[in-house]
Amino acid sequence: MLTANKKKKKKKKKREKMVSIELSPELIPGLPEEIGLDCLIRFHYSTYRVAAGVCRRWQQLLQSRELHYLRKQAGYTRKAACLVQLLDNTSDSAGSKPVGPPTYGLTVFDPVSGIWDRIDPVPKYPYGLPLFCQIASSEGKLVVMGGWDPSSYDPVRDVFIYDFTTQRWRQGKQMPETRSFFAPGGFEGRIIVAGGHDENKNALSTAWDYDVNRDEWTELARMSQERDECQGMVIGSEFWVVSGYRTDNQGGFERSAELMDLRTGEWRRIEEAWKASQCPRSCVGVGKEKKLFYWGDCDSAIRVGACAVPLGEWTLVSGSAYQGGPQGFFLVEGHGERFKRIDVPPQFSGFVQSGCSLDI
Image (cartoon, rainbow, N blue to C red; front, side, top):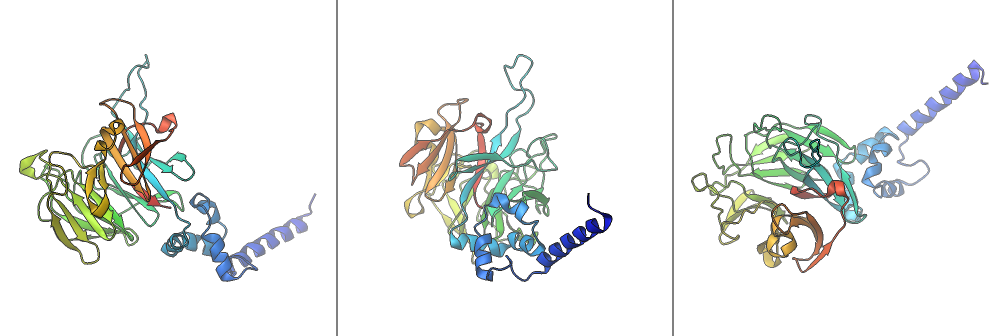
């Protein structure tokens, strides 16, 4: 057995070692700075939470915007799909039908490894996401906005940010206006929201910019018209708001789209961009020369409830062949030329309401 003095000396040496690591100017003692940094940018995001506990400098670096950009420039980030997906409801005593309202959670699919995973629930809503909430991503962070309280069905202005490096949620500043069924899009640390409708079902033409790191909202120029149930997407440095309908034309989806130059903040309107009377939510594809198309027209297996998430050269597409049918999941090459069905674990086979891509 160790004597009391030996135990004290051992604890002292351990403390001194920890302090020396904390104060060390080198990322990895004994290695040049550039090699130490090259090691860190190769870490898989799933290891960040543990790696951040090594020392304060590692923690600051792993959680910084700079490391995300370095990883991206070096080709170590990968595109994953994040999905707002229907969860299995508890069945009745006979096991024949679900009990209670539908509940939704957040699913992540990594197309490189083929791994499906589920993100921990938002602490404020442990039993399911706000209904019809919107999601967008920026710089390795996932942002969940708005929706309806799953208990009262009242619209909420909540904003939650999930950091994949820490694998934790934090609550952001509330949305400045109450809006549902709006168009979101992420670009260089910002989330743009536009359109939707307010608590009185009035369609909106307003737009806002949310700075994820500063936790600040800034009002942007309005669109040329109201657009409820529109679809948002970022193409290059442009934020597109596709179709939608006016307050006085409920369900009459427009053919037009509007796009904002994210460098200048100016809107431009494009006529004949979408099929009239077709809801664009979660199912807009981008073809050659930025021509938009409806994913449900590409294959009979996803004719109903099509949802698409672009993943670089591939797109994750889900949907059903008929109303109430089982969900099919596909990786599609290019603009719908080749569908590759993928196997999905039963717990991740539910209906996909919406989704976004993540660089993690």
